[in-house]
Length: 594
Image (cartoon, rainbow, N blue to C red; front, side, top):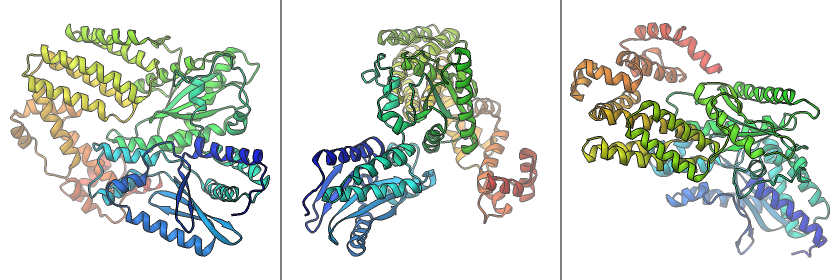
């Protein structure tokens, strides 16, 4: 191998830039494979442990990837050039290390995403991998989806930049390049990767997402690297929290994860187009946006400018993603003030916006608490919940519940820590319910397991909060009327079954007999669980299935009517036009354009 001719310090600086790119932005594992002994050496490690190939290894499906790698190795030996290939949803990179026309080895990097994966692509891959259907109730399937979605997303310029980065790294390994390596690596860092991938730590450090890793208030200026990598040249003075509205009432965990990943990426890109603004993911459900107003404005002018900026960002994202965007806005802080406080206010205001169906809520909105609680206060709030349930007081329980949730949100924990608090509270309350309800222990425990399962399966922090609210309402209702458990449990089996297969010949009389109820009693409980009477609910889910089938180009109206349980095509057309306002084929054209 040729003797390195780079000066040691210059070589070290170049390696430092490579390290920043891989560690802070790409987060992908990168290997050097030597030829001819085929020894693999790790150059850079990844941010997370599991990758797509780990799932292939676990399920014994590595042959396709091994074959893909062999093909690329042979191509590099033959063609002596870098390769950009695709394997599944991922784009993968291979670069030869060339010394005088001879291949000394290869550099291989784990994949990135060029486009947003869809729930359908995840389910296809999972079926090929495991032989089973991908289900939102399968934690392994959702773990796999999160693993893929955590890959960085790059456009064509980013992919070309990634390939060029590995070529620079190959020349650095040989020591043949001079000052140009450092200069070009810095260009790729600032103009390619930092523009397409959010920095993983800067925003969290500013807002104190980790209480042990937070910017000291005395730091009033930005480090020199920040303007180059983030485009922000003055200290942010306010935090906003954004998240997309659920697309459908029946959207599952995977649908929400895919939408959120796309939202987070688009929000980051859009924030880079706004002056002095930067965005970073907020858990697995939204984004934190940091910004500031122009210098010299009065406090009221600054608040108005920031609100207009956040509102513009929400509306641009809403149009691009075709969903409504909710936002919470923290208070502006003076120079050197506490951004963590503004961040906590923003997260709490966001949840207030979601609960009340508002586009944007500021921290000074009525009903929002101003201070965060201590650990002992959180335990005291859980005891207040227990006491309210013991008194069977809906008003006291609602007050204690909202206070507990608001304080929890004000602490700005991520979904998993919040889930632990909510599970601890619910566990205490279900134990109390078991002793007080008068139900047989098995039924009470079954209810507890079901309610805890709802919290466990909630995909995002807003879903967690909603599931906790519903669980408390159920405990209070069943504590006063324990016999209702059996009726609701029966309905909670029937309603999803109808939604899953609406085309079957469902009859109210037959279902009520199977449930052991009279038709009026069945109808009462069905409406409570489904939110609609039996007939309108059946019509609703049949039309929802028809909406989806109309997107299939090769399906006739007769076939769609048959699949969805309508008596004839003419009946289907008549009902569809009455409910949707346009004939089915016109709706199909509109859906295709959207």
